[in-house]
Image (tube, rainbow, N blue to C red; front, side, top):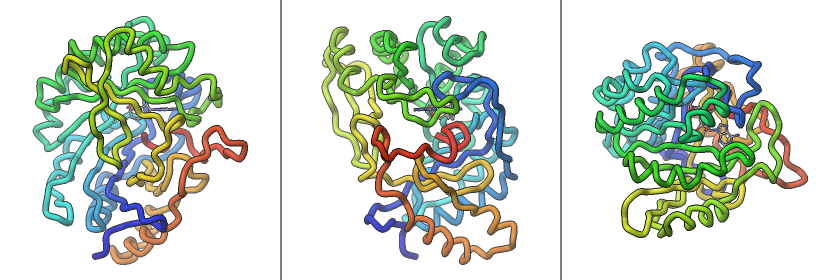
Length: 330
Ligand code: SAM
């Protein structure tokens, strides 16, 4: 079967699938703090069928996300089922989860045993008070640290720790995160704040851009850039003594849309071809109406042809996405 590619010639090999719209964290760059889940969760068997069909079309990497995916009972069994799938070249899938880490300490080893390959934990401050101010959850910090350590110990090393930088909240944590990466043996990845939040507080001034992150980190210790895959979202750096890796995901100041290999499925079964899409495509409705796998394939191919060329963040014609990050699945 022909592998999936869009009209710009980009191969689609990377799927992010949200398995719940619920999250107990209310991070300031993501949530208003007042809204809860807006969209349904589907049975795991439906997600499994979607992934199976997409894997048959050339998907190699599957990242489970949310909302908060570890809130969903049955996620470990879902990982086990996914780990049994094989990519078209016969290899196991590159299977990952993105989590806030709150429930990870108990779940890291079972997830690894079920076949999880990699894990990314979101953590936006290494200082407990600051962490609480950003997440608006008073007791989360210790859980997340325990989760990161458990994941490293379970063999999900090196854990990636994602930190969204938002001016006025945590740009002073950059150096502390550099130290954290070295001490904990994790890869810390700074993410530029994107206009995907419920509160619509984004402006160019709220973004801490790549150059500033590098400049600040150099005050602590110089970084040396190391090669990254073209379709990888993060630019990668090592400290000059070889200890500790830092990544920077800079979709605002250094967009990478030309190398995008991703599509997403929301918790309610809609395909999204770009984080900034202003529409989504109802794969689950087709399944509900009894479509065959061949019909799903035809639908998916048509949707992928409509993948946007690039985002328009910061441009006068920017139209906000039809869903915010937590309701898409980051
Ligand atoms: N609950 C999980 C977690 O905390 O990682 C998964 C869902 S969360 C929406 C996925 C990722 O999106 C997190 O790393 C989060 O920090 C990031 N994120 C959320 N809103 C963002 C925004 N406006 N700009 C950049 N990244 C954002």
